[in-house]
Image 1: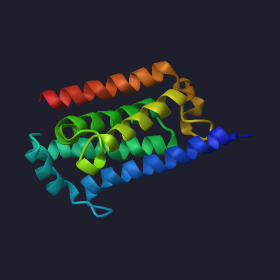
Image 2: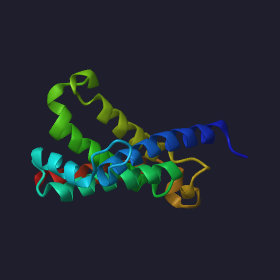
Image 3: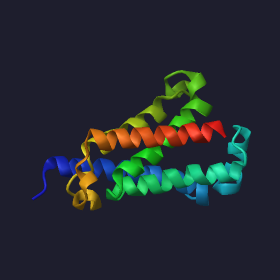
Length: 161
């Protein structure tokens, strides 16, 4: 029997994960009102990511696969790391100079995404997840540290190129 906590985690993971996957689909495929890979690549190039299309692909895949992974609770710490890495990049290159609040173009939205992903890694995806059968499926500080460390490392490498 599943608990209300498991149901709540499923609701959080599905909503958050599918919305993040949709963000990735906007970049990669032009779905949901997105501009697609070519236009997104030009936007990434304008931000200093060269080649823009390659980095747009990496960002789009990170959101798409990270979101799907969180939604179904598959490889949860890795999915969280992908989303954290993308959000760190967004904060450094786009929103960081605008302060905290999203209404001013600030980091609020990116911080929320990164923290939700980190929290799911720490709590674990719950019993209604594919990961429930694996050691990392219970969550914990190790899983959260892995997600934060790998996401931060990925962001640092991307930002240094």
